[in-house]
Image 1 (cartoon, rainbow, N blue to C red):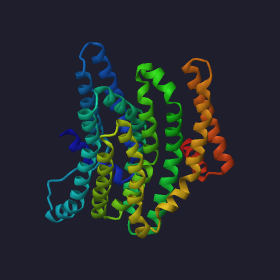
Image 2 (image 1 turned 45 degrees about the vertical axis):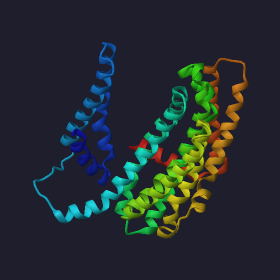
Image 3 (image 1 turned 90 degrees about the vertical axis):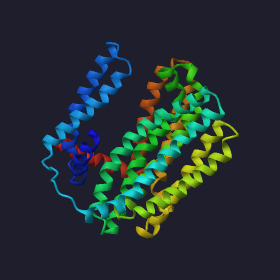
Image 4 (image 1 turned 135 degrees about the vertical axis):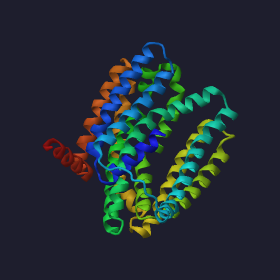
Length: 356
């Protein structure tokens, strides 16, 4: 109920590109809720500390947004607008429901056919990369869609934004995912201890899968921005049919086979998502691959180099520190040598923030 109130204000903020105001408005709520949640946890409230933390965060964010954002709803209703919004929105709603059901069915199958340990390793392998990807992807998604929507009549401009988004997002995502994959042994040892090492292969598979998520996000946002929610739903149904087919083929083989099917499904989904934009924007999958290939190859090379440090006979924490520093240096140096334009764009953006 609280989210329903907040989401309208947040949509207004996104539509008008007021992200700086939104950041500072919600920062207080996040910090306050975190402090209260920790205090409650330390005083024995158990899982209710998490419940309180989420409710308080949401309530404070909603209150501050209502104070800082001057837009207010009025007691008016339009069936004409309802019809327009419903015609566009129900397809996105069905797509979201399908996506949620599809993502959860794997865990249900693993829990049914295999042991609880297998399910735990699978989920833990998914947890680390998913946290990174969800935060980056949500940030991109919240900015990209309203920006593209304003330019929906200018297909060339939408193509330019889609291209820049894919290149920049993969440039950031690729080293994070490859670094996490190649350093996974030490990360699992330090954070979760040796008993969770069977989760490492799953973590690596999910890193490869999630690395290409920006392609999905940018292509789908371009389709939504030009008002083609009908295409969005059709693509979603096709992708889920492909994914479920691969899942049913591999589910009786092993949990690892099910994980590998995600990589195949991800590649096929990239092609499916980008296919409409071949005509809508004249920006097909091969062009997109060409744009991101330098970042992918550099990230893989960086990961291969830092992986060699795993063989040093020293403590995992020290190895991980060396891997992180070396990986950053290799990626930045490689970006300069290969003249990757996303690196230059990122530097220019940071300089702009510095001036502000």
